[in-house]
Image (cartoon, rainbow, N blue to C red; front, side, top):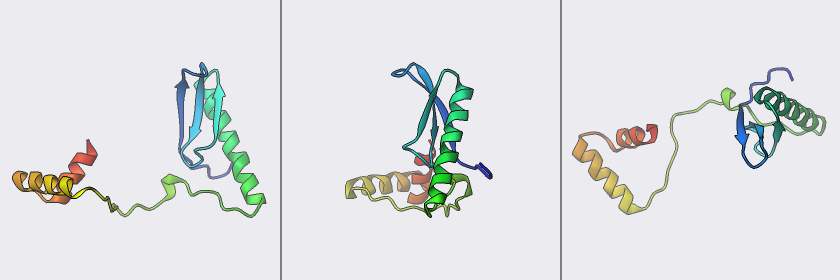
Length: 107
């Protein structure tokens, strides 16, 4: 597949006793193989076939995560008690709530 910028991962499946190839942009697809190299090759072929099928049916394939633009902002809803506790921690540390939350997420 031309311009294949999708996010692939190969891991071991204890349940299947084989390596499994996965693609983050196509979470419903996987490929089992005896070697990690074969699992990666298999999932890449499977994704290429899925993309070709989608295009043939007038569907738009998902955008590769590597191609997306991220603003660096997202909203998280938390209970008021946790918000209060985090605000207190931030004040005690002399940092903004945003800086405290960012540091905690980076761990």
